[in-house]
Length: 412
Picture (cartoon, rainbow, N blue to C red):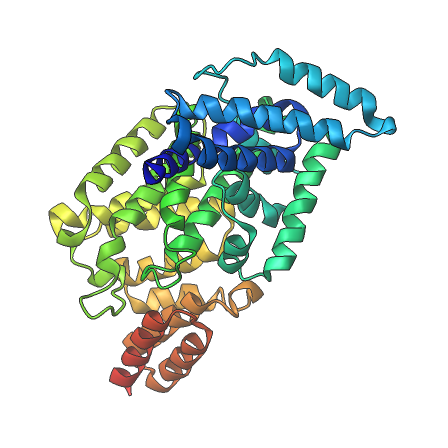
């Protein structure tokens, strides 16, 4: 019975965590207070549910208890200089129908926009979403983003304090502000996905499920903004990448690059869903953004499932558009790799040489790996081996480093 009650509490918290936090903090802007109140409500549930049984609507029960905990905490913290504000918050919380209703306004989208507010340090957008929306602890987030736990904890506390003190609203902006802020939300979701994607072997327990959690966030944004092409494009991009996850390693755990992967190992249902989302995004109207273009690139790679060959001319055109839209050195680098397929190594190496002066690529492993491959195909073995050594020195993931070492050994 106790195990069933604990599992019910965990399930309710997992299913409704972000919705509960968003609702509790929407009026007060006190995200940290809402987290503490929900944590206390969960503790009460673990004590009472084994004795009294699991309520019919666990999430509504948690909301009622958490709201009362939040009110009690506000009363204890109230000071003369902000008494009026606290009294107003208390009145609003009581007015929010203190009955245990299973349905309440979904303010999660507003919470996401608050986490990506321009007033909050940009590199904290993704960590803040991971904690506030997904419930990750500071130590897990710190491990993911290679920051000391104490440092990350302090940064997250300051960000939540900023939301409360600046009165950052939990609302979706309009007009030009919507595009600016939506880009911040989507960038943060993709940053979280990229961190999970960089640990494909699941070697880091704290990051093992991060890619799945980021996709959950992407689904949330897409479901709440079904007419936003970029939100749909981001979800399509992540699903295309996720569909190839099992093909990135062979049976021995060695890295397999995209060009050498067996398409039969790709997740066909995920690819079909990604394709449907991309078509839906294209019907939304408005301009085509970065994530739609990147998803289209993945779609052109996925053609290999049916034809045995990626659509290289289409990929080249898509990267041309991406480079023009974003001026991203990574997009320009990827374009050179595509040129090697569509026009040959000489044209690709010339394009790569044009990027050599960009300081942003000097410590970027894929730049040196691409350079090594192109030099090897052009017959310059010594220069290729030097580039491979640069790439090997910059790579953190053991399986990719072994792959680069094997390529260099074969060349030598």
